[in-house]
Length: 138
Image (cartoon, rainbow, N blue to C red):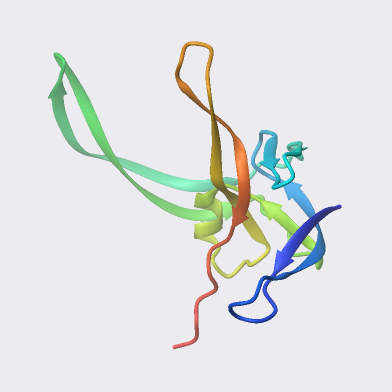
């Protein structure tokens, strides 16, 4: 079990709640906690897919090559488990944005980056999770 939070009073720090985190990203997710501890949540093995319909919107010349600018339209999400009380699913930002009514979907936020062996920047993990705000009734 991993501690997760939910706001009780607007403007006040949330009280910690216990929630099970299930990683549906397909790769381990590392959480860098405030105490300096790093928690790794392994991939669950469940594969989530979002339908995508790409189309070439523009082609440009760059460095002697033709480069395509692609626009994608996204559709249904496949493989997402049903909601279970006390469970938060770690997914990609795209998956969460395609299911905004699902408040049990969270995605890595506040990226932690390290220097790679060749001096490049490498994504190491995150310091928090985020979710898509639930739509307010009109």
